[in-house]
Length: 362
Image 1 (cartoon, rainbow, N blue to C red):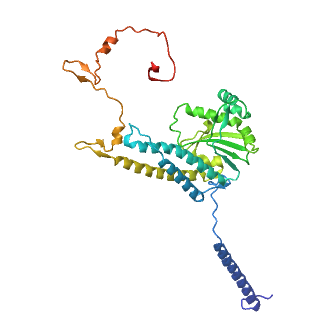
Image 2: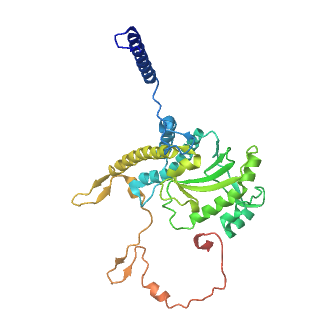
Image 3: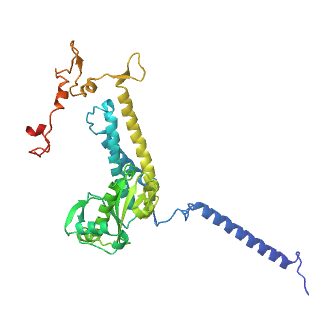
């Protein structure tokens, strides 16, 4: 038997082959690492954050949103306040606050329309569309549970009683579904009043005619599912069973990840601009007032318009030397006591009805 030692030629050949193989693998590993380092590192979105196939980031809509904010702020600042005797110099501040409520709602509508472009399956309708409130639909919604009306579809050209204008109609062509959205900057002002229930009734009645309306007016656009949603911009706790959605849940309505985060950033930036505008107007209003000498917390108007807002004639009682009381027009206050003894005739023999006039032109 022949033993192979390390000093034999065959042993040298084996060691050389092993060394060459090891160095080759090492070179391949280095080249592979260099190739991997040269490629851009792609980190996929965590599975928890990707609920939908479409995604949008604020950096992608930054320029468009800034333009929408600028237009909204400019429209708020361009308002013409009406003189108010109670508000006085602060009427401009109050006018701005009222304008903010209206403009924020429009801003939310335009922002959602912009975000919806990230989902190619969506069609957004928002140009002051008026859906007919068909009488049969109103009666059906008022007298039945909404769940029992899922298969009921009505003709949009049937006799109607008024109409309802939604803020947005979003149609998903891939799913053949549609949403009727009504955006509110905050539902806090609705409270427990009946206004919210009236709004829901109009929206649900409109939903029953929407499939027929879309097919007839939107180039044969067909849907077999219609949902209604009142979106609360303040993102208070939602109630999907009652049709109330928080703005923070808009991702699921649009099927676009990141839409809610973009809307939150939009509202924050818009809020900063509005607060700057209000602060400047408040400082301007405070600059028109000056403390009265010798008093604390009392202000006197510096401009004539503030005093000019006070209208009407004041009746100031005065005392005559004989002790009788008269007003500034010389009317004897004691005459009222004599009138109380007069017999009142009721019911009157003749009743006049009409638009309010001074004593009905009597």
